Length: 378
Image 1 (cartoon, rainbow, N blue to C red):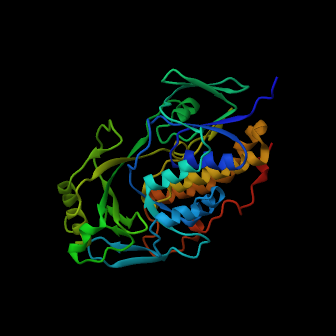
Image 2: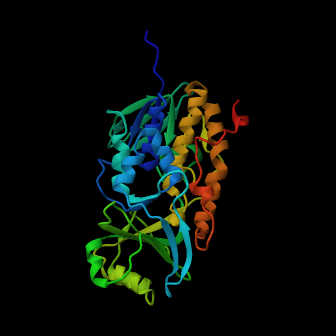
Image 3: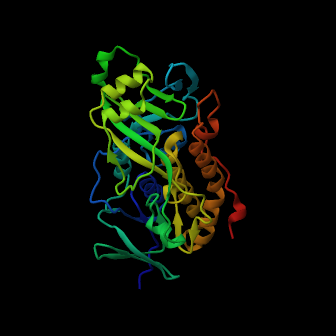
């Protein structure tokens, strides 16, 4: 009989899952990627991809492609949201790769294109997992099933894989919402104001992060963090309005007022988080990204941490092989927990780059240059 080819199943084809799949394939592994959505479209919002991520994207050949379609700010400005006073001016160059701001959908499209044909399977909502010891049985709600040697849960804050590892537990509502809107840059010309390429406006208890999402600067995007009483969030987001935005930022700087005035459509997203997990893996199952260490988006590093997770997991499996997956998982957690926890803590505190500081610990990080903590290998 032919020798069984070892297979890795990834649940969730978001930015972290797609990155893990491409990086594992680059390392020579057989990967199947299962996504519950029926397909992808250019929905969502803007996203930051710092030099720490671009160094990873070099491995799968999409770093230059990403830079070509992105805005490439030279500075991160922090400003007082009411007076406009500059609080910090942080250089974004000099960390070994480009700093990009881009539409999430455009980035995701590049990632999916980097996968081998036949890797991605849509409409695969996970129903059940059975780790039988020798392999893992996956059952999906469409009636299909699959088997894999190991399973990576990259399925977000409401991870089904996490539930199987740790039981059902709702995430914690943070008490904040984020408003998201994309504005055609042409609409801003009439205001005769300076709309900077990457700026975070800070108020006493809220903020607005603003940046371009395309290389030609045709789109300007903002996302907020605003305190909000809890409600029963039945959907990932709800529609907001220009009027609600104006009320939330009443008395703020004229640039913020202009952005709100130029807004045609804005959505409102509850921000959730979880307490640090007691474990990242069990048996043949392992977690990454928001399934493992979700955080408020205030540091613009949530997706970056998921991508770093995928790269480190691929690196560790490359060291040990799938046969020694238990050692790989321990090695992965040993080399990711401290950094992910630090970023999670700073992001949740919402203090990053508020004042002049050196972000080299974030952007200068090169995952492949870091020596592995080998003590975790059994």
